[in-house]
Each structure stands twice: as structure tokens, then as C-alpha cells.
Image (cartoon, rainbow, N blue to C red; front, side, top):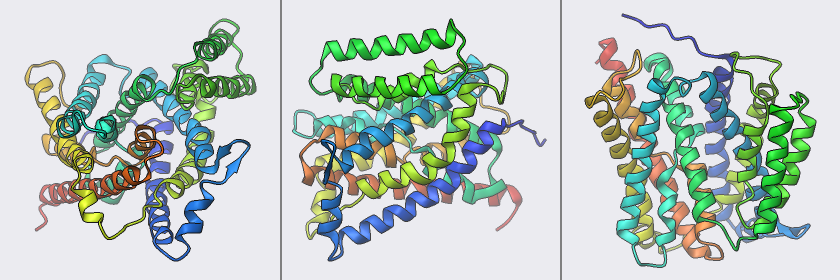
Length: 390
């Protein structure tokens, strides 16, 4: 029996931008790799370390531009909680538990290989799934995969990112200034009051308040991108599906394409200038790199699949309509694509350790490539079998 699913316009727009955005990310990553390993490589890498207004270009990208990316993640999470896959607790439990399994197992693998060493701080690297790349792979499969798989994978990746955000806030914080942090939280409370009490529907006051909150969070020592997530939950949201008058809906709609086609590509250019030297194979065999590769390519699929199997087996939740176990396993494989958030956490875990960061990024790219190819091949094979093709 074919099951029709009603997809919200916001989800369709998000998925559409994610598909094309994944292709653009791949293109920018390849360009960055080629330039970094060409005669122009030194000048290219030096550009990202030029200082403007007290911060390097790379830091402006990773701390300021990526706060907008985190704002979009927060808005997407808010939408999912109000009227998406996470709105119904019974439906939300499966991607939530799958995300938990996909976080704990990879982190445990990395921790087991790096416990007590200088690279132990990298345990957060293999924890999050890259939504843009994962949806990009699903886009290549077209109608060979059900719509419910796209919804499930998106909800899983959003919860994954939420887990990564919590880890960043708790474990990758520099020296903490309680005064600046208190001021940032005061701005957040004021923005909440504007939306919940005063019912201010204009976006400008929230964006101005968000910029102030970003500055205060940056000065506090907590990573400034967290301000983007807090701002998302301060902006009023209408529980009515696709309410064009909702400030949250308007902002999410406005951010889809700039994030997919500007912010994430610039992030890729700034962070994937990986110099592949003569000892690249030894770098990939280091305990940190092995922890990342095994965490993403092996730990993620095992964690997601086992968590789903246990949850459904115990009767805690059930598979969404139209989704079979072969699809869940395919989603688990694609969960190992850990590009954006993994690179982001790498920069936080190993500040001023260029060699470690370079090796870790190589491991992330290798693992993400393996996960993407394996997930695509598996789901393509299952789609052909279902259609009766050889």
C-alpha cells in the first residue's frame, strides 16, 4: 500500500536548499583542497588568518557567520517541535533515541582510543550528522526512497545537532566570564519577553538584540554561535503550519538560501584547506584520526540502528509509516556524514594545533566519503530490489 505524506512547505524548501547546498559544499571543498595543495596554497591559507577588526577572517567565519547557521538550526528545531516530526512525542521518540545512540557510540569509540592522551578532547568530533550532505545524497536517489525517510533523517540530524550544540556549550568553553554571560542571558530573557508577553512581531528588534547577545556571548567565553540557537527560540513561532505571518517562519524562509549557498560554502572554503603532505597515511592512522573515522563510519550506523531496534523491539515507539528497516539502516549509514559540525568542533577541540586539526579534517572527509557512498549504494540497491530491477 502506498502511503501519502503531507510535507510542510517549510520542510520542502529546507530539503530543496539542502540538496543543492550539499552539491555546492562538495564543490567548494574540492576547490579548497586543490588550492591548498597548489603553489598558491601558502597565500590561500594566509588569507584566512588575516586580521580584520581584531579577529582573523577564519574566526569571523566560524564565530559570526556560523552563528547565522546555528540560528537556522534553532529555527528548524523549533519548527519540528511545534508541527514537525518532533511535535508528537510518540513520533519524536524514535529520531531522538536514534540521535542519542548516534552520539554516544561514536563518542565512546573515540574516547576508548584516545583516553588519557592529548587528543581526548576530540571525542565530540564524530557526534553530529551533516544535514546538507545527507539530504544531498537522498536527493540523488529521487523517488527510490520514501518521503518518510527524508523526514526521519532530517529530525535525526536536527536532534544530533542539538546534542552537538549542548556539547559545545558545556565542554568547549574558554575562560568563562560570568558577568558577560549574565548580560547575554539577560538579553535573551528580554527577547523572550518581547515575544511571549509583548507579542512583538517585527523581526528587526530580535535581530538587533541577537547581535548584542552574540557580542556578549563572545566576550563571556561560551562559544558565540550558541547565541544563534537562543535567538531562534526567542523569536515568536506560530503553531499553525506554514503561517506566513510568523516571524520565525519568515526568518527561516529568508535564511534557507543564504545559509546553503553562501555561509556554508564560505565555511567550507575557510576550513577545508587541508595540506596533504607525505605522511598523510600515518596521520590517518593516528589514534585521533582512527577515533574519528571509526566513530563516524562505524559508530554512527551501529548507534543509530541499534537504538532504533531496541526502541521498537521494546514497544517504546514504532517505525514511521512507509519506513522499513532497510531504510532505517540506510539512514544510519548516512548519519556517518559529519562534515560541517565535525569540522567546527575540531577547531574548538584543538586550538593552535594546526597539524592535529589538519589530520582530523582529513579523517572527517574520509569518513564522510565512506558513509555517503555506503548509504547511497545501500539505499539505491534496496530501491532497485523493490522495483524488481536487476
